[in-house]
Image (cartoon, rainbow, N blue to C red):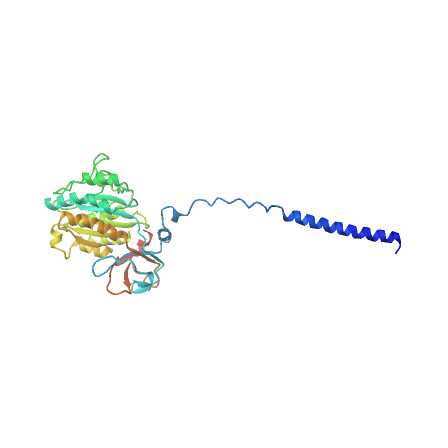
Amino acid sequence: MTKSLRKMALFSVGVALGIGLLARNLGSVKAQEPPPAPAPKQNPGPPPAAQQGQSETQAKIVKNVNLVVLPVTVKDSGGRLVPDLTQDEFRVFDDDVEQRIEVFSVEAFPLSLVVLLDNDLKTKEAEQVQNSLRAILSGLSTADEVSICRFDTYFHPDQGFTRDQDKLLTELKRMRIDESPSQPTSLGPAGGPFGGPSLNGGQSPTGGPAISESTKIIGDNSTKAIDDGVYGAAQLLADRGRDRRKIILLISDGVNSKFNKNTYENTVQDLLRYGISVYSVGVGKAVLNRKFTRLQSYANDTGGDVYYASNLTSLESLYSKITEEARNTYTLAYVPRGNNRAKEYHTVEVRVRRPGLNIRTREGYFSGALVH
């Protein structure tokens, strides 16, 4: 090889080596470059409704209007609540057809409570009830709402529901149960705890369904009417949401007029239509006459319960027991399948596989009740 050719070969090798070294250096620089900055996080927006005070179960019940919702109370032979049942232990039948349980929950729902007081008790019973009323607060939570109402020959609503326990305590302290029937309520805003629109106005104080003409004036001015009182309380609860447990706490001696404008049947129909349970507390004559009374019938037909109190101490202890029972129920819900859709009223039966237990729930529902 000539001298000139050797120079050209060496030059070519040098160029190749230089190119290779430059490539390695560029690769090293690229490897040391910082990674690209992460994309900015997008605003997640407001939390879902279930995280804003309404549970997932409650939200599902409210959303699906086709669900039949059953509050179910289960007690053992000693009358104690049974809290440890599972979904697989329950069976639900609609018109004798077994249903698939879509929702099962043991969570406590907030209460919408109407305390419905007999305004025509004997002196001794009236004093006991009046002195016991403050004890109602002990069973309430801050999420519960309460309305205090009375009945005699008329139904007396108050100014509406309140969650303010201080306001409720003030109303309970001012409570006076009359020994004789009163005139229709027509008090203004300053007229005391039972102020509000006159019944002759036809509109419930809460803005819900109008209270019917049959509730406003009861025929016999010397006797009281339980059916009309319960009917009026049901109208106040009608527009409370399905994410709440709707309760009437009926305190009475069970004496009922023959001149009710609302029948027992149409009153129970509204209670079932709006998903309301009646918990009855019998005082006075009701303690001696436990059978075949309105107190027992309303409780049994709506899935509530009935208790009897002979003195002040037992009255006070019952309030917390009732609110605990009403709050700590199982919630079962299903979409009806295979039942008789031509019927307006459908029977419901709930069974549990565990023996020896007592089950309380409503015995049926009306087809139009699913939207409430």
